[in-house]
Image 1 (cartoon, protein in one colour):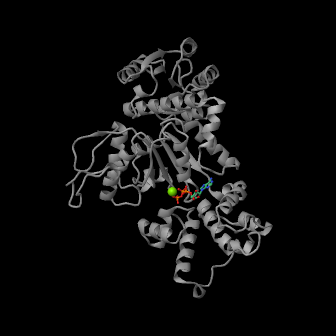
Image 2 (tube, helix red, strand yellow; image 1 turned 180 degrees about the horizontal axis):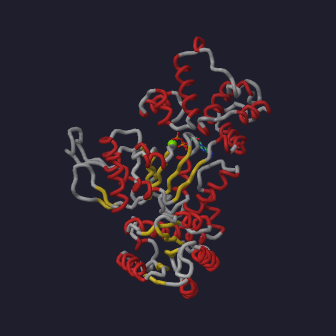
Image 3 (tube, rainbow, N blue to C red; image 1 turned 30 degrees about the horizontal axis):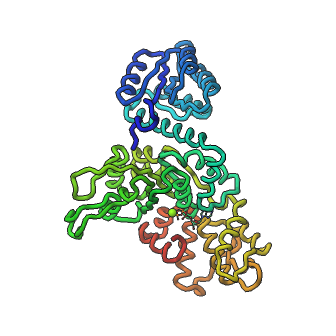
Length: 458
Ligand SMILES: Nc1ncnc2c1ncn2[C@@H]1O[C@H](COP(=O)(O)OP(=O)(O)OP(=O)(O)O)[C@@H](O)[C@H]1O
Ligand SMILES: [Mg+2]
């Protein structure tokens, strides 16, 4: 995994543009020793000339040129001209330390990423190879003719995505699915992160190989380590036989790491090493094993905040989020409610109504859906059991209207109280399990167990 050589069949071609000779020399040398073929340009005119003369794979563009060293205007104009020449060429811009606004503006105008000077070699290389990988993905996707594209779509698991918000997500899915790029899927609890991961796998060249899902946040350090990397007989007291880890099970295929923000830090470090080297060590073994795995990760946490708080390694995050897909909350895509409800109704027991009454539809639209699509799925399941007429009535949904007061505790069973408090805490924290656990005074894993046993999540 990872090495720039594997990304395109010939050596990837990098154009470095800067008017400082020492920068051209240093970046040039770094890139060459890491497998790039390097072109350099020291003026905007030279950049255009190189770009017209040959096909490039990635361009590292300084924003400031001698004529106009501070505003970055000239760099931005140059970026626009490059985009006209080749809209698919990934451009990474370089800016001097402290002039981040220029970089942000450049990204807004189509640059794919930016690095600040003085740059960090490893990070610069990681940025360039991520762009190469993405470029390859886009090309593979574009090369497929209409026929192939149609078959590919037929193989996808059914996923309702009619709303504009979901259409945007699916457009990105189509673009990145064919590659081996890592994808970080974010979104509240129950928004469909796992179905989306399966969709990405099903639409990739790895579709005939394994899709292996691991809950990286729900297991203790030691258990997770042998779950992911396997162990050899005798590695610890209970290790009576060798055990293959999920990474090896997913070899050639896709590994889905769920709840990544809650992964113990020691395992984050190990995971990072595997992603960097493509090699792993089963627990108790000193012999490395090679793996070729595409990693998809998911979380309902705010990754920037988790990274800032030191709970999620930034370098790992950077490896995992080559592409980030954010699933909107169900309340932000109400246009999908009707289709989702029909999908779930179609799965209900024989003889259950297949339609919603107008009142039921109204109730669905009015509800806030703190548990998102999973909550809707459970509500419809329950309603199809309760329904007596030939359509689902609003009462069958048992949704509390908005602004309803808290139910009377005396009238509730212990389980109902528990469910009520948990759902309220989740709703108050936008579905964030860590936050909800904190206000409920539970550990995350204890809350997870309850969510599962109450059927709030599976
Ligand atoms: N767009 C969709 N179309 C059809 N079904 C969906 C869609 N999104 C989610 N679902 C269904 O909703 C349920 C929850 O989805 P999923 O398990 O993927 O959510 P999640 O984001 O991983 O949740 P959690 O954060 O709780 O792990 C699943 O049964 C899934 O099949
Ligand atoms: Mg999930």
